Length: 142
Ligand code: HEC
Image (tube, rainbow, N blue to C red; front, side, top):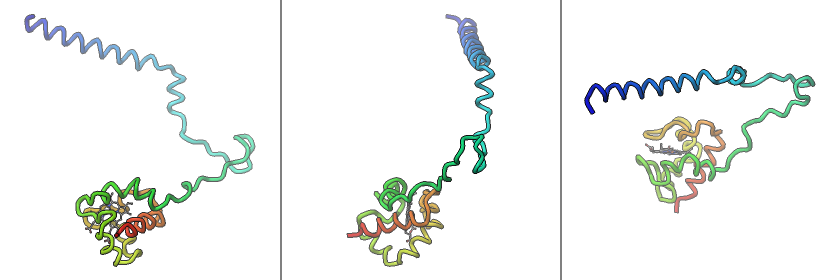
């Protein structure tokens, strides 16, 4: 196979795939496009029956997660193994930290400290949930 032939076949394969992808895009029907560019939500005023009647109670983010659940989902990432000097779960590390008092620990957990990012990367955690997770870790100290 000579070089010219090789180049020609590469170009034709590229051209064919370009054509195919253009065709796929063009075949999406207008209905689909309209569906895709719809507003994400619609406002329904309380008491307005024309849009579904009674409005469901506004979600408040669900019930608070337990300290253990938050720890397992978010904090264990670093605190289970002691990544980057994080006080390790189930060790005396937490007895030392616990001496600071839960409020001081909560304050540094919210702001972040050293290699620990703010809120331990749990941006949707409430202060109470963070506090629960800290208590869970402090209580793990032998
Ligand atoms: C990306 C890793 C990482 C994650 C995730 C993480 N931490 Fe930390 N955490 C650290 C490190 C590192 C330290 C030690 C920082 C230092 O003392 O310099 C630390 C320290 C702490 C301390 C001690 C603060 C103090 O004042 O001594 C608390 C409390 C804490 N983390 C709570 C949490 C909670 C609660 C979560 C989960 C919501 C969490 N961490 C998630 C890395 C992490």
